[in-house]
Length: 247
Image (cartoon, rainbow, N blue to C red; front, side, top):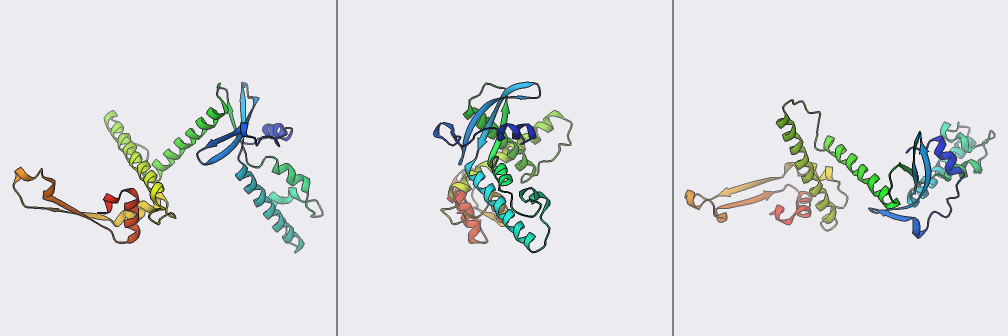
């Protein structure tokens, strides 16, 4: 949920200083949250509001704001106008309003999830981020895999198209997992999945077949192949996925 006026008022009246305790600590992937819940009514729906604190995000938002305020103060001293979004942190005489900064810091690193289901705090966080994963999956399908609106009418054609997209995404997810798992090992820790796929566009494989009778074609020894890479970076990417691919 967005931080609208109603939630901001509730948060301003809460003492969140004791939120960061072991009891409230929940990990989601590599991110740590401190979570508490309160009874809340959204419209006419009764439920509970989960308040999530990300301490790393909180510190980052605080420092970014202070740096902007500091720069705005320098600009004001030199006669430049203060940015509209920062004016609330200054008095009419351009002195810093520390109380306004403290009020803003009170909501740093916070996010909110509303539910009317009977879920534990761990379940609320997990379900929400599974939703986030689904949204990122659709983003990938529309981006890297170029999934577009289906201009088909026959049921079997639509199912075939979606199946192909699903299989493509499965391959992409496997590619991402193996790349991130092994990229440090092969010195390509700075590369993203999209960059890796782009890098492999020029890689090709040459197959050699021995001239033998048709009865011998099932013998694996009758076929040889060589993967041709144009750079060491391409070879490193292939090895990160599977060292067999670079052969």
